[in-house]
Image (tube, rainbow, N blue to C red; front, side, top):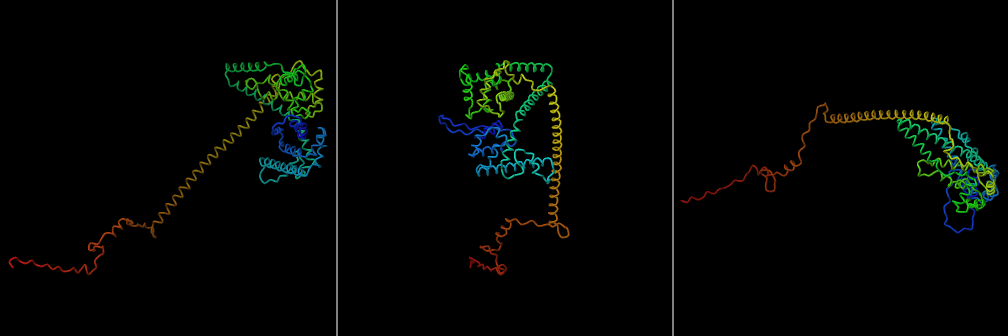
Length: 453
């Protein structure tokens, strides 16, 4: 992964290198750490290109013989013509995916600002992206690698400056909110809050002396407290090897920042109300920049053993005044704070207008919903009226007169009528024939004999 070291770490300052193999006891394989996000909008594309190039043996060999200047100048990019076919195929695929992603970004941006069905010149718009060659949208060539390195180098040169600016705005916002809060209090509570604020500031400043990063005092303190060695036996070469944690022969920015942990712990404790962890990260960044400025001679964002040893030999490496922390440094002026508050006020006014517009649109939608509900109700009533009218017309005669229908006989009555026997029926329930009805048999009654006869 040497390419990650030189390209991401040397050029970008945020990459990680694979450790050089050493005769150490075997350990269980650990997954490689995820590369740090550079903050670039094409970070994923950059990392994927690096990962693919690392798989090619020829490219790795050429990279081992190259220096940071060869990478920056684009000399190494020409070696892309000699990588394996499957690596080139994968690089081509990654570029096409990036082009497609940029097209989607362009379309989304244009849709938000323009009417639909507007013809867009994607090629012209793609030219504003400097990390690839838009003229060739299908294959990844040496020119693409050169542009990617140059763009990332230029963009990340201003990365720290952007972080400082972001921190300054954070500090101004914090002060603005504090002042606005004081305005909302009565005089007595305001005095209490101001006294509390001054007490926290005073408590935050009550910390041990901060050694200048990279100074002999700071290095010896790490040597003694972190490494557990005698400060009188300090050896720059041994110190370097101890803190070159990945064994690549250089101290990158992450390894340097790890050296400042002891100094930062003197000032910042997450458990303390008076200590701001955002300020601690700004402090870490300032310390790293200070060391790089004074130790990194060739400005490749890496500290070699030679550069490190020379820095320890400097007579002015120890500064008697120590290190001025963030709270002791004027981060902004009152004029800058005033302009910042004015910007906040303007932004707040715009947000209020947008909120009012949204509120009005919400009310309009509610009123429209009420109207739609009323129309729906009227429609339902009209449908019911029509159904009733149809029913009445179906019940009327040909001349409009109403038709009355007799009541349908009840099924039980019908059954009773069927089962009721005729008065003159026989035992089987059969009605007698007409002859039997009108011709009843004559009955002969014998007179009883008179007793005298």
